[in-house]
Image (cartoon, rainbow, N blue to C red):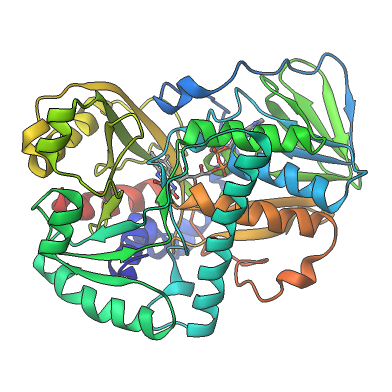
Length: 473
Ligand SMILES: Cc1cc2nc3c(=O)[nH]c(=O)nc-3n(C[C@H](O)[C@H](O)[C@H](O)COP(=O)(O)OP(=O)(O)OC[C@H]3O[C@@H](n4cnc5c(N)ncnc54)[C@H](O)[C@@H]3O)c2cc1C
């Protein structure tokens, strides 16, 4: 929830310039042949995040060829929740999840832990349709209730704390826009509060910000434990989950055949791509999103004295209004985590460890010092990075693709998926059961995401955009 005019320009900047470059005729030829000249290779680097320490040992990979009614590729929030909801919609369906590494190896157990209401995109622009905005807000609030209920049902405590979240104003221009944004959102029926600098400082302890937009219904989770929650929910619902089961090729047909890294195969009449920033490696959704790297760091537990000195009394997580957003939170065991700031794109949708993770972490240390000087010397116990599936307008899409329309997908979470992924997981369950009609009102259903050109244009656009937005880091 926040001032979208600031954030959306970020997405447009990231890769937007590339579209213009790709428009020329020579460029168009280069654009068309690039995917064939520059094949992408799948890579699944190990998740070393603090959250990943909560992940259970992986299930074994398949030892024989699999046949199922529905196969989900990807064991993050999207894939696990989709498997759960497919079983809810079709209790007799054989549902299989294939995860390349461990469930939660991707963004789902690497993120900033903010459980946000709404979606950060064009449909929620302050001037958008108020009825739709209210409906989407209610949908995301309802999803948080569902996660809480599943937590009770499975007995997995994912440390869901719903104390709200604040978008804080980085500079005066952002601060001045916030009251009007809050007024428009409130007029549409959303309970967003405009906070002054004093109110922000009282709640967060930091005097670095000039204003804020407080959403009382957002919150935070332990992302690793939320992966455990969704994994248990899917398994209890009857889905079979295989890990270390990377899909290496997709052969389309009325029955889709998948080749797996271990030499086995799997087939089903419906396959769900829940592969987020990795999707292009299987040859899908390349023009919809680009993987953008983001860095995160976490301290050891703060002592009672350090907590008092930081003054983060209400423990509300926050993200700032910069285009290259910085976000922070406090865990239940009093660790301070901070992420964002420096963003990178690696040529040809690269997903390897970023060369300058050290630069990203150094930036986060400077930010921590600026925001909470009293705890500036507390060391980071862990640092990590993850890949965001950034779409050009920061908006997502859920629907069908493939020559036979039997490949389903949800993509474009653009750094806002901790809550929203399982909303779309639910939609995927209904689309699988051919109950699309009940989601006809949802603007993300079968939505065509703005086109992102191929290399070298996407790299040029991303580089240019990132250079421009990094002026505020
Ligand atoms: C650093 C960072 C901070 C973030 N902070 C926040 C935040 O605070 N709040 C928020 O709302 N959102 C945040 N996000 C975004 C959020 O984490 C994601 O939108 C969400 O986790 C995406 O879930 P997913 O299941 O779609 O993707 P992922 O969790 O990435 O899961 C995809 C899975 O598919 C698997 N896979 C891919 N290809 C194959 C294959 N060929 N075969 C088998 N398996 C495959 C991968 O191994 C992976 O486990 C952040 C993201 C990052 C990276």
